[in-house]
Image (cartoon, helix red, strand yellow):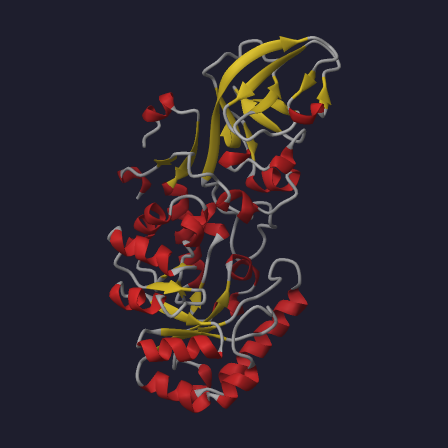
Length: 377
C-alpha cells in the first residue's frame, strides 16, 4: 500500500524503509568486522517481516533471526534466500519443515540439541549465563563436549551464543554474564575463538561496549527505531525513527460541561469541550492502559486523549483546534510538523515497553512502506 492509497483507510502504520536501512548500516559500521543477525521475529517487530528482510537482505547479513518455524517458512516462501535461524524450541513435527525450507535451529537445552542433531540441520547452541529460561549450563556443555566437538568437526555447529538479561540497566551483571560466557567458550576446541561464530549482544549491548560484539550481533529494537531516549554518548548514536501510526478523525462534536466520555465515564468535561473521535483502538494495538493519558497530534498540535481507549475508537480534546474536521489525519506515533510522539513516550504512558507497542500493532492496520525509492539507497 502507498500513502496515496491511505485516503480510504481508517488508520495505518507507516514504515520508513530508508530509516530502517540507515539504522542497520550504522550497526554494521560500528560492529565491523562482526556480522549481523537482524531479528525479524514477531512479524518484524510488528512492521512486516517479509518487507524488513527484503530491505536488509542486500546488506549480506549472516542470517535473519525468527522465533518460530512458521516465521521462517513465511520468509522462504516470500523469496528470502539468506540463512534463517529459528531461535525457539522446535517440536518433533517442526524438523521436517526446517529441512524442507533450509532453516537452522537453536538448541535451547539438551533435548533440543538431541532433536536437532538427529534432524541433520545446522545447530546454534545456546549457553545459559543467567537468563534462566533456556540454554545449556556450563556443566552441561562440559559433559557433552565430545558431542559438541563432533558437531563442530562435521560442520553442523553453526554458532554458539547466549543472552544478556539487563544490558541497558545493569552493567555489572552484563559484564558478569559476558565473563561466564567466555569461560564456557574457553572449554571448547580452539579456546572458543575462531572455531565457530560467537554472539551475545542485543541492541542494548551493541550500544554499550565494543567487547560484547564478538563475531556476530543480534540487533532488534534499534533497527526499528527503539531506544531513542538512551544516552547517545555510547557506541551507537540514536537510531532514526522508523514507525508512525496514523488515524482519521471520524466525528467532531461539542459536549457541554459535565458530559461523560467513553466507557466507564472515567472522564467528565469541565467546560464545553470540542471532542474528536478517532478511528483507532486497542484492537489496533493502541494500549488500553493509555486511557486518559497522553495525546495525539493533529495539524502538528497536541490533542489530549479523553476517556478510555475503546476497541476501535478513542476520543481526543480538540477544543483549541477549531479547524479539525472529519477525514483529518491524527498522529498517534511519529512526527507531525515540528512535534513528535516518541515510541518510548507512547510506551511509558501506557505502562509498557517499546517492544510490546510495536509487536502489538493489529493486523487490520495496513503497513505503508515509505522511503523505498532509489534515493533511499
